[in-house]
Image (cartoon, rainbow, N blue to C red):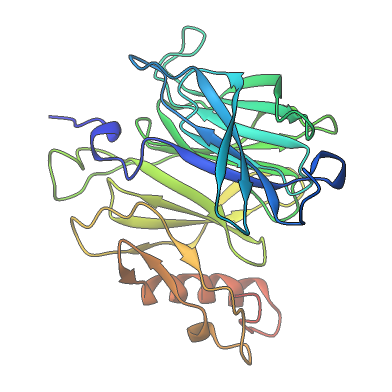
Length: 284
């Protein structure tokens, strides 16, 4: 039996935080932020993405209200320039296709309102995660129900192109209820922006792709993935912020589902060596 992600999700919403521009600050201090919260709307009273004021000094969070109506915007991400927000629409039917969608919005820094720029298919059902590459030129999406990942180029006006890169995962895990097939749960880039990594809950793998920094395409790395403990179901991973120390790959720790993934470090190191004339690992 397939169990929906919503039952086992870590949270039913996600927040993205944006520092206020000086013109929109309450002018009491420099510690005010604009916070966006994505929600589920299907069979819920929620209507989309909500905005809040956050005072980092006092910790007070105050509601602004509905920033934009949107269907099941379960995860949101703000562009590094603070002008745009991107949200996955975690649905299984988009424009008659078995797919979800990703929406692009322009941010009004004074009111917190979001203006829809466009919405495109993710080419996979149930997208649950969206992120941006380090350059702010590409959006990356993980399709949970579809078991796939996709990339999109960001246009000059902040809107999204049609899909630029797409990979369909295949296989299954040991848990026949939750891992009957692939379930991409997270995708993001390595600190040097050369790799895109995807945590697939259904496969017990973290898949590694070379990211085309011109077109945004995805090419499987060699080796293409790192395995985690069978049945652990990796949902998310994070790179340690300290960076390199003498070019040693072991100085950067990657964790997923509470596991220190030395295997993933080896995968990235091998991929990095393959792409460098000197065989160094300074890109890690």
